[in-house]
Length: 275
Length: 330
Image (cartoon, rainbow over all chains, first blue to last red; front, top):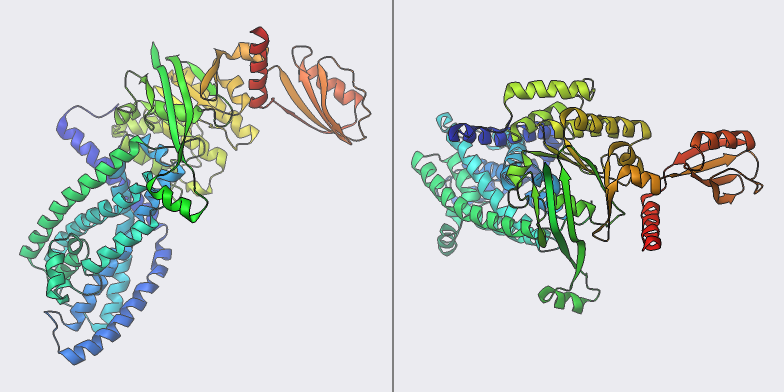
């Protein structure tokens, strides 16, 4: 009944397991697609405000600022906002499971807890990303016009979204899993999330940051979690994509080890008292 | 063949007390004040393949904690356990392929999707062969009468329908042991009966070992052959359900609403008045002294009965009677 002992077949069975988790999460999230369309009103307002601000800035500075034209700057913002707004509330879900006892349900099944959640949140995020890119893209096109897009790069960009999602997942999941020790993780999440936004280039590309801050950002993971993929969306290059993937892979190892370590320590001391 | 073997299983929880004043909160940040709660105190237990065992006790007795240790969810503070030859908390995933679990208060169904999607997902999670899965699903759909609800979003199903799906889903991978934590909680009597019938059939027809916790004496009486009672984290009784019924579950409670106020006169064998107030009357009936049918017949003849409800005595009273019996014997 259980998986065959042949290693290759076993690998595919495990891969299909998590792929199915992602697919089901995507279908479940699709049930809320109209709610998600409504929630994009916030994105439209943000884009409108920034278009006005950047128009004034570009009028004063010239047609190109640090390699970005006005449409490119707005499309960059659309991409960073889509990455951030599509990311589910991982910390809150994990905290709720640890505190509320749903962890018992998860641990009674033959899958890796973190693997299950990565796949679940990826499925949810893909629906949100599609909605955000659609609404953000239409808004940007109406306000500032299109930018050249290299369609041959689309599969690479999709792959980069998966790795970006994984990096963000492990980063925030590590915060959520601190619920094994602390009463509330919301404060910690706010701190870690804002750090990521500021140093990751959420509102403007990091090329526009002062030199000292940019040098610091180069040593940190945050640019690879938000700004890096958005820069490639606007200015795609194969070398840039390879460089980003390499950096993401390195940071994935670090975040993956930290998150798994926290999970393993935490699950040993889990206190699911009562039913 | 023994499928569950437990020796000296012990679990201590650390419960952190919330400080009241700001100063205490500041101190607690560096030196948290924790109290230790012994949820399970040195349990020994052995379960044979194919048994139907009721693991019961009042709230906070340690039932769910024990189940969670046996399914690998919780790590014990001390003691050993072997479930199907595996140490649950060390080999959780390997064990999960061979056991099923239903937590009455937690749902494994995806609420916005029909049960068939959850079944498909579980087939992948348990790494079932496609053809084998389709055959098994068809069997369970027929057995649990799920044809009409398989394609309805789970959020639109009644609690009874959802529980039928939950149990069917937990049997999809043909588990050798089924852990059921309050599977009939919140169900109406008809749904309870259906769920009990399905669990009984899984045990009889497929040889699944059933490990059940419940507050409902009816679950134990109708489903299980053996009962282990746990209180304050310790096993206080381990014996057959028949013996428990004979000694401690022979009473039934009858609630009556009368057409005229109760006059205080009732002379029926084995019947004791628990409470009488105005038109309401609550009786305890010892079914070993007189069959319940005879008592009911007499009540309907002698009193102007407008409404009637019969129930088992609550688990707390059975346990209290059990303690009294042991003390008297000791």
